[in-house]
Amino acid sequence: ERLMLNGEDKAKILHGNAERLLALDPGLTVFGAGEGGRAAAMLERDQASSSLGMVIDDIDAGRATLSMIVRKDMLNGHGNCQGGFIFALADSAFAFACNSRDQATVAAGCSIEYLVPVSEGERLTASATERALVGRRGIYDVTVRDSAQNVVATFCGKSASIKGTVLGMSGPD
Image (tube, rainbow, N blue to C red; front, top):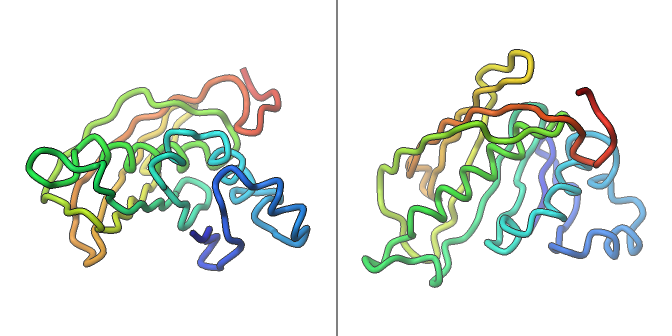
């Protein structure tokens, strides 16, 4: 599992072991200031995304790309990935994109459209992009693709910033 920042491979991330990795190699830049450090800190605390095996592939201000492999325990009765797992991947990409500036932000609403079924073993990638940010409100588009770059689902998220920051420091009211 690799974390990519601005297209550069920064560090191997083993969920739940960020402090140990940093102790082993203090030169890792992924835990420094900026979007990558906030993303690593957020992923470290995000049990839902971590338990589903999600990986941050890329992140920058107002955008994020996450991926995960569809496991057997994610399949529905038709043998396809259950839509809730696809939703979770899209929602997590949305969350990382709207929290990428270190202003604590939550979902105010969202919608998803599923386009094609997904099989076990498929690597799904969700790319979130900020469409608008006005005051405390934002709108984000997320596209979920399979490994052949077929669009699997589209997601639109609406965000609202709240008091605080991603790293837990005080922020604007």
